[in-house]
Figure (cartoon, one colour):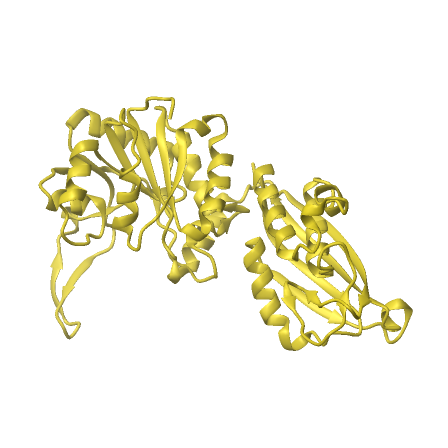
Length: 390
C-alpha cells in the first residue's frame, strides 16, 4: 500500500447468513439491486478521513468481494483489499488485523450486515477513539420494557432499561491494544467490544443511529429494501436474448447448465447451451453492453467447448463492474427434447447461483410446427431485468 492512512476499517462479510435464507452468503445478497456488502462500503468510503479498507470474505466469494469492493472504492482502490475469513467471526477479524498497514493507529470493525450505517457514525467513532484512547461502541437506548425470566419463563423482575444499550457497529479501538487483545483472547466473544474489555481494555458507548440496524431476517431485508427504493420510481432495465441450436447426435447435451446423458446434443462453437447463451444475451442487452458474440466471439479459441457457466459468471462480473444488479431472469425453452420438467428445479437452482438472482424456467413444444416441431433443433428465449445502481 502506497498510502499511509492512520485509520483502518475491517468490514466483516464472511458469515453464512443462515437466518436470512438463500444459497449465497448474506453480504452478497442484493437490496434494491445492489449487494449488501456494497451498501455497507458506501458508508465506509463516505468517511471524512482516508482509511485502509479491508473486506473479510468467504474464500468461495473472494472474487465477488473484490469486484464489489473495486466498484465501491473507485479512485480510492489503492486503499482497499480483500482477505479470506476464518471459521468464526473472531477468526475473520483476526485475519483483517493481520494485514493492517504500519501507519494505522485506529481500527474500526464493521459488520457488512449493518449495510445502511451512515458515514457520520464511522466519523463519530473515529473521533471518540482519537479523543479518549479507548474502545468506542455506538449504541441505541432500549425502548422496550425488558423482563428477566427464570428457567420456566416466569418473570422474575423488570430490568432498568435506562442502563441498557443495543450495540451496533462500527466498533473502534486503538490499533495496538486491539491487536494485543486478539492475541490474548482464549475464548470466543459475541463482539469486539466484549473481547477488548475481557482482555483489559476500556470501552465507552456513544449514541448510535437507527439506520445501522443489522440485516438478519427476511423482514430486515424487506425493511432495507423499502428504505432504499427511490420515491420517484425504480430504474429497471429489461433485455431479451434468443438462442437457437440444431441438434447434433454426436455431441453431449448441455442445457441450462446441466448435462443430459442419452440425449442428442446441440451444435455450437462452445457447448451449445442455448439457455445459458440466451440468458447471457438478455443480461448484456439490458445493460447496453453488446451481446454474446461481441463479448465471447466465436473466433476466440478460449471459448471453444466452454461451458455455459463460463459465460454467465463472466457476464455477472461485467454487470457488477458497470454498476448493474440482476433482479431476475425468465427463460422459455421451445423444443421436443429433452423432457425438461423433472430437472427444472435443479436447473433453476444452478443458474440462480451462477448469476446471483432468481432464474425461472419453462418449456413447451410447437405441436410439430416449424424446425423445433420437426425435431431439428431447440430455441431458448430469455428475459432479464436489471436494476441500475445510483
